[in-house]
Image (cartoon, rainbow over all chains, first blue to last red; front, side, top):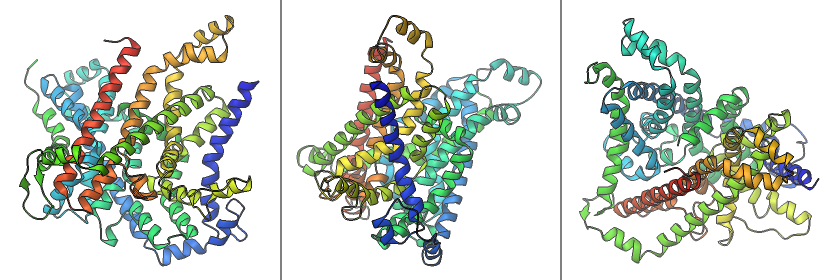
Length: 271
Length: 290
């Protein structure tokens, strides 16, 4: 009896803690400030799209959105390609080279990427890669390669060796085996890893904050930070911006919920 | 079989290796080199040996304060987030419709960006219009200036962090707990063991490997904290919620002490490595592995 009450009240409390702020944001994006302050949880008196209009007209929300999409898609795509190739090599290697490479990438798991901000910044200034989406994509690739290789190598090693050997006897080279056998077989792992990487790249603030200062190169998190300065306490505008920035993630989460959870937990467990 | 590696295979690993070596390993090594220099990022660096480190250890009250902040933040988040997640996972273990739905709800914050979460909680914590103070006032408790008061800011951010990532840990725990053989609980039930005894003698010891993963991940996450802190308080007021990465960022990009900031980040690496090592050792003792 006590257990049931304890369990249900705790679960209700945490569910409310997630759902109430989310509702405040969603409802708030249709309200004006006064209504948010006085009745944050009530349905809006008028479902007005004014905030969205203001955001599109005055704020540069379209450009950062586009930049975030470009950065996330290229970072994730290239990382998956290179990481899967390297993982295939590590899993199939018959010499010490594979083990050595794996250890080398393991160093990247032990050193948090955040500690390299100074050398990366200095290097990127010299290479003229600041204020460049290509620069951001390169940083993302470098930072997410170790974890991706860790996840994918584990997956490739689980695939049966005999199958690879049979394909080799039939005359298939490594490249062919990788493309026609290994890659299709690890599609679930690639999808999960891809989502995990997408969330990281879409949400990152530190590196864009450091590397990007030009308005037309900013990504969404960076623009949100700017909005906070601009609309200091206009929560209606801030909530609308948060909505716009989160919508792609929310849609992906709701439609690919299993892959999402698999990806974000694999990243944690392997990392 | 040849003992030399096939060329195709080596070529396949090359792109990943090249990017990683150039943009991860090389910067990590330069960081070590910079930490021995006095350098503002513009003029020529000057070699000063271990001076940055001795200064950090003996003269820098701010650094010590921030190190303490980060340890406190990490400790609070690890304890609360792990216990909550384990508790929720035991509640939501069975794959019933309600459990699955609640897991989806709990996991939801994980997909948001730290900046979005920061902005949402800025509103909840707002001293004048905020939702939390309004709730407190409605039951007669005076509100607090959550983020603007040096006494509370760190704890307020820790609470947000727990809200942010507990759902992710719940899912990891559920996966771990579902591996425990059901017969153990049935046998305990027959012997008349209470729920608490079942938890203490079956769930907790059997879940230790998962706990180790959750604790290690959360620890590293809390020592990497930047985005959330930056978007909520920027380390303020009076550095009361400053963390290592926010401090390193400011040392480099506000004070332009690049060599010094590099030395700070070397300390961060050591802290993370030391904590990871200690946790691994504790885990091995507990599961009896060698």
